Length: 74
Image 1: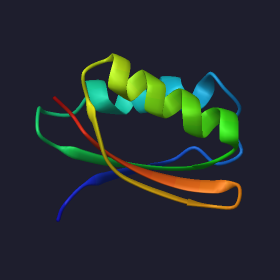
Image 2: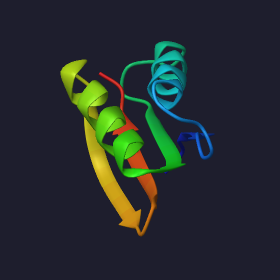
Image 3: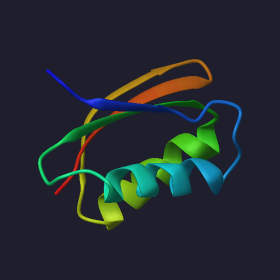
Image 4: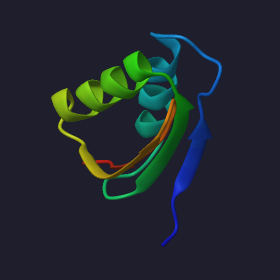
């Protein structure tokens, strides 16, 4: 499966959400984006933004403080 990937580790909100939005804005409908980051607040805020903007969280992996979200653009 081909997908774009961004790493938002070390960045505090709202930067991870803004970077996720910017990347999704540049993608076509149906394409996938993997967002890799760290922090509970960032994890929750990115998921909330994705869902509130009609995109889909396809897969979530969380281990300790680090996470990976696979997002499908709609």
